Length: 272
Image 1 (cartoon, rainbow, N blue to C red):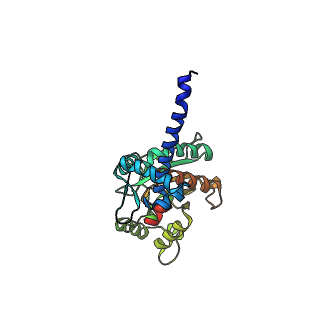
Image 2: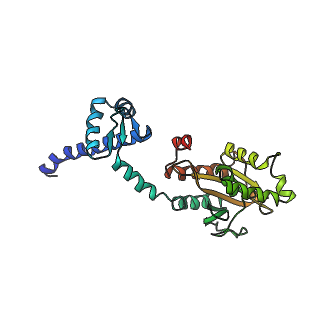
């Protein structure tokens, strides 16, 4: 290593540390809701207010931060907003969910898919099947019922939309005796919504097809809205839909990871 390179190393390390500090301050502002006092930001990053103030000056100059004159709070600036918007445009739940589908297929050896809410109902867009003899026929473009599929139950439970509720009412009116038996109370759709939201997932046993069970979990976007639903299904005999079962744990975990990649967090939920 030459003497010239050795002399440049401390300078490079200092620049890297400065960049890390600047990014840490921006992330702290994000965690604090996008606007906070200098004291709050300093406490969040664990540095002195004097040091954070120097970095704020540089970030302000670059348009990443601005100071609200009425509150003196520092806020994420226009350049930071543009970066965030560019990241959001890349947040596709289907693309982000494809690795999860493959992991679930390998771990559980069951059929897994991601669905979105289409004009005609919950619509499968991506699916993965195990390397075992296929007995369950699901395909991209298949439309599922709202009340008799685990996928549909998640959508009807988390989306407050008159059109969707009307579709659910129509399905209920046309239900068979066996299907109605899977719902509870005088207001079965509302009871279903409360149950799914309390559990954080939906499960069915034989309500869509005899001998088929499924578990579905919501995928939330950065606003706290359901962007898609992640579902696993298989033959009822060997498919555990129990709350403490392996399928529920793996499925809800993967759905949570996809939601996090879409920008969902506790602030998203509280603001929804």
